[in-house]
Amino acid sequence: MSKPEKYDPFRRSVGHVLDIIGEGWSILIIREAFLGTRRFEEFQGRLGIARNILTTRLKKLCANEILDRVPVKEGAKRHEYILTRKGKDMMPLLVALTQWGDKWFYGEDNVPLIFLDRDQGEPIASVQVFSASGEVLRPRDVMIKAGPGATPEAIERIEELNQNE
Image 1: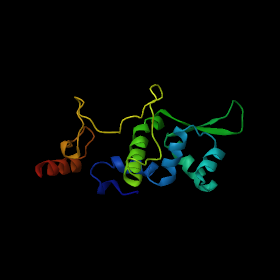
Image 2 (image 1 turned 120 degrees about the horizontal axis):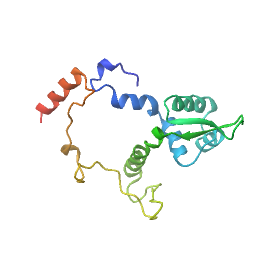
Image 3 (image 1 turned 30 degrees about the vertical axis):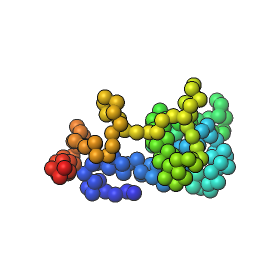
Image 4 (image 1 turned 180 degrees about the horizontal axis):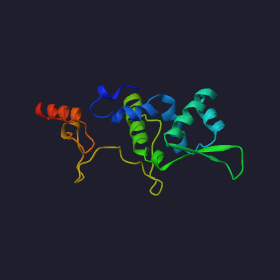
């Protein structure tokens, strides 16, 4: 993905994320971590991923603080990979990607995976975008404005977008 920032006035908000998880193996590794997989051999066995690719992806996820590599126990040579707070914050993204993929690839009546609320045992709601007052928003209901970190190019692009509405 590595597009130079000069081509993206929005400071690569999405591009930076895709640089970390934009290829298939990384998001599958993250999914496995959410499902409780921790050890290298477990990731490899569950995903069928080549050792060299898994090593590279785990290093990248650790370097970007999505996973933390920690000894299995004090003084042990073996390690496991645990989601960091930053990694755990990816849960809505993982659920949204799964729900979208299941709906559009398998159909709503044939989804292979259902997320449940652990306490209630009921399926969780579909991930949606809500207004501050709790209303479900559709794409046409959303607009953008420049934030405090916006570049002059982003401000110009946003003004252009808002004039075309």
